[in-house]
Length: 129
Image (cartoon, rainbow, N blue to C red; front, side, top):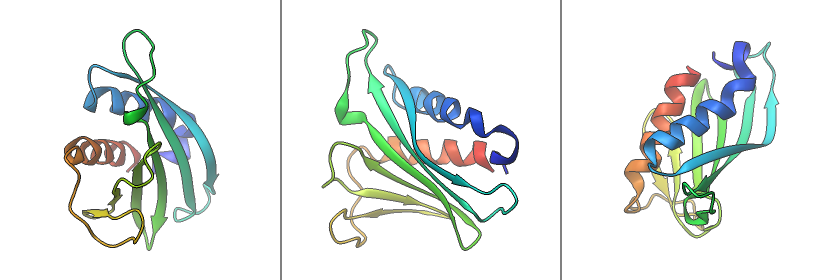
């Protein structure tokens, strides 16, 4: 797994992935929490915030994201939500993608920006595995 050898580079990989899927914006990543036991493949829980800026450095808060990366029953899962919009749907990206209502947790229709978020999840999982 990626984390055993390169845990310090996760933020760089996530930021570069966000830059690719959300052009022309530039992204920085802040690690919020990191619980990872490298002796156990199933002990992983990392939370990151992706902060978005335009080319002049102005914040684009509507595109800020929060990502939680964890293992659930030997499956790598990414939970991605809009950082500053708690009522927006949340992406559960495991073996397949599922959009959930942020209030009820029930399955819902994807938002109109779903392709960007799903592409980000796919790109990050490819680097981690």
